[in-house]
Image (cartoon, rainbow, N blue to C red; front, side, top):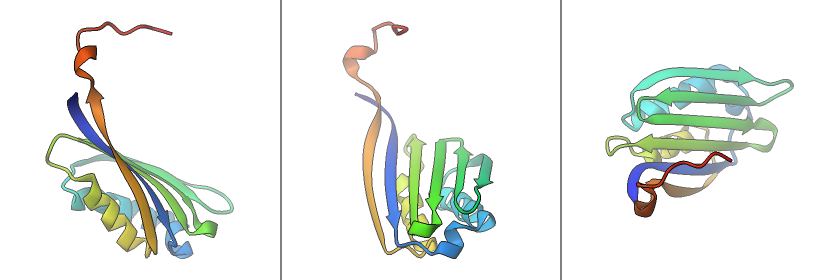
Length: 126
């Protein structure tokens, strides 16, 4: 496979309600997580739901970080996708876990890319 990136899907549990329900805090923590991992932040957008919860994305030169929070459950679903060798998605996940005051993280990493045999094939529209 031609490895193009690393994609970490993280389930972050036991987080502080007041952090996960504060759009300014979540935004700042997500941006800082990207910077902590060595990424270059390009843009970001976050939305606060009623009565609680936040969704957002930080676009980085190397791909993105995305989040959706369930403050009432102390839970955050996080997606960190990085391309190249400069940025480590685990650094971002560890930063988020620490700054959300989480008790536990469960995460998996997938390598993203093109299988060697698919390099020469055409894309088929479905």
